[in-house]
Length: 244
Image (cartoon, rainbow, N blue to C red; front, side, top):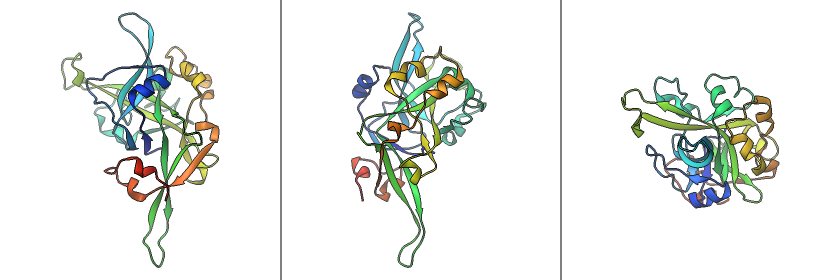
């Protein structure tokens, strides 16, 4: 799985990297740089939507909450458990299949965290050792994701920003190469040349879309043991990525 990640680039930098226009979401704040992104945090996403005024397809850099809430959910409470969608079944599961067809996005990241359980010894208690996994060249990771709109029926006016919740999930697969030594699952990513096809809601062939996904940096990743301070969502800052 991918349960924590780092995304420290400024929105203006992300907009340039993904050739996207920043779009404010009245219901969300502006995600700050974070070295410890956790479920239900506001995060940056890149997506393409048809402009209602012009009818043109536009690429947006937009904040969303991490943890997908299906449009048919009774309430948003289950979103915290839906931070990941498995590639093997994402096109079939009721919670994800419509989004996979029409609402795909990218979640920019510096890298992601995984943990290895360290058993107790005569001198120390058992603990979980975190590792930070990132591209060798330290380039941006364009993690493949899906997004959804959830309508809060308690808000009568559907034009009220409070009536809508936008959420996203990250698509994962079996981990290989260096990441597989730490955890059996990892996020999937896309090459820049494939961003347009992945994001375009007009492309709806599941097999073709799945073929675009690959391991981040084509498996050229570095795995670094970092401080257990990252284990707490209360801690943040670039020091969390320092090797130990």
